[in-house]
Amino acid sequence: MSSLSGEPLDAAELADLAVAIKSWGRELGFQQIGVAGIDLGQHEAWLLDWLGQGCHGEMRYMAQHGVRRSRPAELVPGTVRVVTARMDYWPPEGAEPWRVLADPALGYVSRYALGRDYHKVLRQRLQRLADRIAAAIGPFGYRVFTDSAPVLEKALAEQAGLGWIGKHSNLLARRTGSWFFLGELYVDLPLPVDQPVTAHCGRCNACLDICPTRAIVAPYRVDARRCISYLTIELHGPIPLGLRRAIGNRIYGCDDCQLVCPWNRFARPTVEADFRVRHGLDAPQLTELFGWSEVEFLRRSEGSAIRRIGHERWLRNIAVALGNAPRSAAILAALQARQADPSALVREHVAWALAEQAGK
Image (cartoon, rainbow, N blue to C red; front, side, top):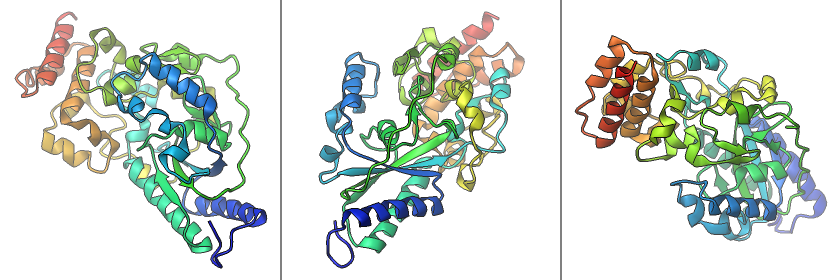
């Protein structure tokens, strides 16, 4: 860690650099930049308790990395600070979410997945930010992360003053709500840290009350095994029978806890073209989606976060939504066309959906 002259940066220079980093971040399209220290002891205790209770379900990677997730310097040796960046993603032209959720003929896709895969967008911008820092001070130690490694990103963002972790476990900011992505630069620069903000959930329990599967088992604690985002994205096998009806028409993720949050009335639409709606997935017809071949799924999900679940789980999720829809000839025909699907997982969910339709 030194200036271009080779001399170590003093406290005043580090303070100026922190101000410059925030300015450069805004120029690169981030709405906010903060700097956090690396002591996450309290969050580590919460993480270990959460893992100990099995709340991570089949996300074994959550446990495999041990405490490296909560100890940045063990993940990236030399790290002394974390630069955390926020980028808003609420699509301004997207269909009204409650309208989509109220129409069982439509499929609901979490708003974060309607545009381009955020991993790529944020990673590229953070790399450009790192390049800008290097151009100013010379080579320095860093590593870029965007929800792709064992990083407690919400805890770090909270310590960097970007918001507080709400009762639904998402990061909340008073002026912007929670519709944003986070990314990090682990750095070996002892930049001055920002101060955390106070929490403002108060007595509100709207997110706990609205959760369709009661996955928010207590304030600030989500049991992933019941969470629709986990069930439709992370879970590889069959969706538990007792939770299928509660999923409704949510085919990729779930936003209910964010949609009902009072702080999201202050959310600002994204200005990023990459996060605008693609392929009409803000209000798609379920029967149309269920007819996609694997080739078409891959084509339409190119560059999207949706691609990671693959065609098989995509069909699994839609079959559940079709089973939850009111009985109709179009839905029956769509399901019957998949009764002999090559995938046993798809066939099982189709059989369940047909039984649900027959019961109506």
